[in-house]
Length: 193
Image 1 (cartoon, rainbow, N blue to C red):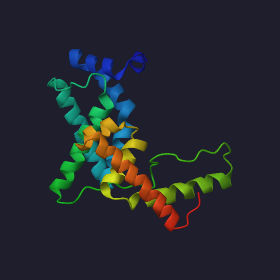
Image 2: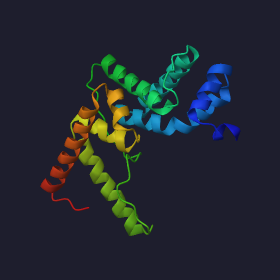
Image 3: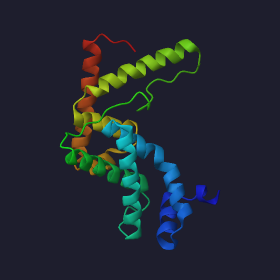
């Protein structure tokens, strides 16, 4: 219970200074879902995502033990950057171009909130999310990546820029063009939400 009250920075410090495995377990518990789902969205394969997720935490542990953590309380963006780099490495090994895709098993972000949970509203909400996922899948890779990292992983544009090794203006531009393209696709397909 005490570990749940500590910040990420305090947990990292506890793990580094005293090899506190409970601190590491709490960091894993807090961030597992976001990191794993982000990896899955990149590689589109659950088995590969599990492998990369395990590699991510092995690399995190090794980096912490070697004193290579300099993020000062920003554990999640640091961990996401490691996961992202491992995804890129995975594609380089397999000589495929990195892509970002959605999955029916995971929500990227909720665009619609209903106050009523009746069957019709639930069905409409699911249909809207399916349409949005299909539209996001049609975006160019760089735009898709920014949309997912911003809306699912809740990362700032500064964090996205650092992770993808581009300027903040480039990350903002990719989001702007993604939104323009999404609006254009909605108009061209006469979609109503």
